[in-house]
Structure formats: C-alpha cells, structure tokens
Length: 497
Image (cartoon, rainbow, N blue to C red; front, side):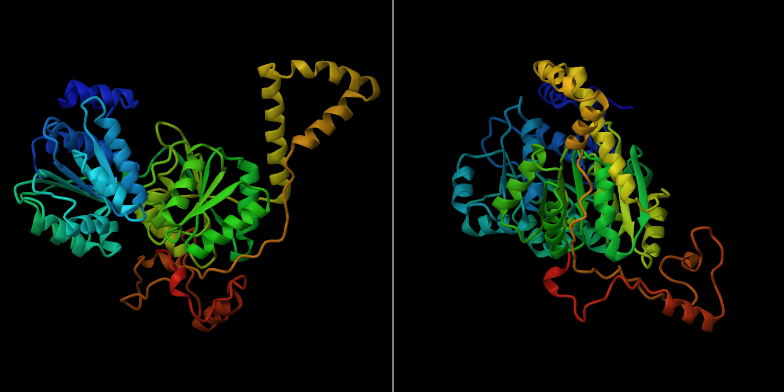
C-alpha cells in the first residue's frame, strides 16, 4: 500500500487530495506520479475507473506556475462528458494551489469559450475538434504549454481524431512533457508515441488489477425477445439505488428508455445523437438520484465518472473485453461492492468465453428469473421500507389514525392492505423492441481453429461437441434462435458510435 504522503507532493496538493477523500494510491497512480514528476514521457495502460485522471492530474498540477497566467497544460479527451469530468477533477485537485482548468468542447457556445479563454486558465481540457477550431481562430495559443496529456488515446483514434491530435501536437513546443493513457495498445498508438514522444516509459496495470474484484459478475442466457422481461424482473428483484443499462445502438437505447418508463421505471437515455444540453440534464438528474436507471451506449458512457452506481446490466453483450471492463467499472467504486450481469443470447457464447479469458474471471451463470421471484423481490422491498419507517419513528403522528382503524379491522387485514399499497407489483404491459442481431464471430484463419482458440467446439462443461457433419447441420438448422429475425440491412445510424 502506498499513501499520497509518500509521493513527495506539495502541502497544497496533499490538502486537496485529503479533501477529496483519497487515502492510498491506486496501482496506476502509484507507478505514474513519481515518474511523471521527473518529466519522463510515459504511456499508461489503464482502464476508466482505475484513477488515471489523478495519475496524470497530480503531476500536471504540481508543475504549474500559478503566477504565470498562461496556458501551461493541455489534456485531450475523446468525448464532451469526459472533458467536463476531467476538468472538474483537475479543478478539485488544484483548488488549494489556485490552479484554474477550463474544459472546451463542441456543443457549447464557442463565443462563451472565447471569453473564458481570455481569463487565462492554466490548463485546457478539450475534445480534439474544438481545440483545432480555437487554434484556427487564433483564440487558443499553445506556445507556453509544457505538459500534454492524451486521455483514452485508443478511443480518440477509433473516433477518427488521429489527424487532429497530430495537428495539435505540432502546435505545442517540442520541448515538453507528454503523457498518453490508453486501455489498449494498437499499432497507431505506438506510432504516435514514436513520432511525438521521447524515451517513453510504458506503465501497464495488470489485467487482474483492471477487473475490480469487489464486483459480483453474472450472466444469464436469454433469447432476444425475452430480454426486456428478464431485465424488468431483475430490476424488481434487485431494486437498485442507481443502475446503468448498456445497449449496443442508439435505437436500442431510445427504445429501452421508452419501454422502461412505460412499465413504471424512472429512466433516461444517453447516446451520441442527443444535444449537449440534454446529455448534461440527463447526467445531472442521474447524479442527483432523480432517475433510477440510465440507459447508455458504450461511446456515450465512456469516461463517465458517476459515483453510487450499484448495478450494471449489459442488455447487449459488449463488442470486446475492453468495453466490458469499462462498463462494469461504473460500479464497485470507492471501496463499495457492485453487481454486473450480462445478457447472452444462445449464439454469443464465444464472446463470453473471450471476456472470461481476457479478464481472468469466470462469470457465474444465473437462471432466468420468474415473475414470482420479481413479485417476492418487491414484497421484500416493501417490508424493508415499512421496518425502516418504524425504526425512524416518523410515523408517530399516524398512531391515532391506526388506533381508530384497528377498532373496525383486525391487525393482519390492515397490515396486509398497507403492504399491498406500498408494494410495486410487476408490470407486464406489452413492450416490443426491435431485434438486434447477435454479435458476429470472425471467420477463423485456419479451418480447425478460430480466433477464440479451439474452445468454441466445447460446451461450458468442456466436453467435445464434435459430431457427424450431417447431424451437426441438422442440429444447427433446428436450433436457431427464432426470437430474432435479422433485417435485410442494418442502418448506418444505428451502429453504436
């Protein structure tokens, strides 16, 4: 265990860190901060939720000259939400040192941003497109920048920001300190490092440290058409404080949000097509606990730092193991336990095996919950509410009413009626969602082997499933998932961007 007191930080930063409730450094913070304080260029391979913002934010702020009212540091982030949240955290870290951080991103008034830039912030956190816009307008000058951070670099590359990043780096002095953080290490990241970084040190958080041990991870095998009923039953059983439901496409998010509200749940959706004002409103409502369920795509939720999430539901299995880790990392934070469950259709088990192999964690199979279990879950919640009211002694003013009611009714009948009133009955309002195709499995390079190794031909119990080819064809023909009828074309706008 390494505490922040052992990392040689200034009194102002230690005061901020203590004020934020941080005590011991996470693995990425422990390994990154001392190296970054020496000005060594580094690549940190870490997922969201491992504390990487503080890992680069603390050394960045420590090196800022408060008296010099010029932009000295710039952080590039892939999404508006991440830019805002990184800006907020950097302002908290630098609060007692007097450091001012300004987030700039698309979707916000550029006139307002230009006015804010004239107030000479010390650090800029921005999305590449908007930063380029300001550079072209000459409203953002980077000649005094001594530290550059690329946050979630792989995501920025996936979103097509590579040329923007290169243009921005060309506008920053060559004598600078560069830190790059990425969940994965594709060749493009390596080429970027070779071109713009010097004597790079790679700091990698092990996979075992990336997958939060405090998260209970399960999966349920369910046909496409049964998914929504299973989701609502689980919500009734768990009664989560705050939950995030992940869908694969924008259309899926919109339909799920509407369907959940139709069945009496307080839900809002977030995806890339929403205007920034709406996205901000949804996130604010979720953080303030005015909605129970946030429905999101991977891209919209990437980088969101929301505390208090108790449950994560992967309504659609994620595209890759990295996305899985990002998703479940929303829960089980700050020493709390979390819960994540993934819905698997019969043709998606290869992807489940891959997630288990990469994360080195075997997911526990959960049977499909019944309507009776959902009802029992809500009855349990009602009893807990009733008992907590008794313990709080807030019901004293109703005692006289209770006495009067008991004169004409027996206690068991009266209590049964009260429980009936406060129990949320499972809602079976008909809901129809557009079917999503199961994730495709890439064709194997070798006839006898696929990208997932030879495990594909084995069942969950490891037994060899190879049979006579003719029987195998018959089996496949009769065993298709009839709950999904694939559309002729998958519209471009419904892809999860």
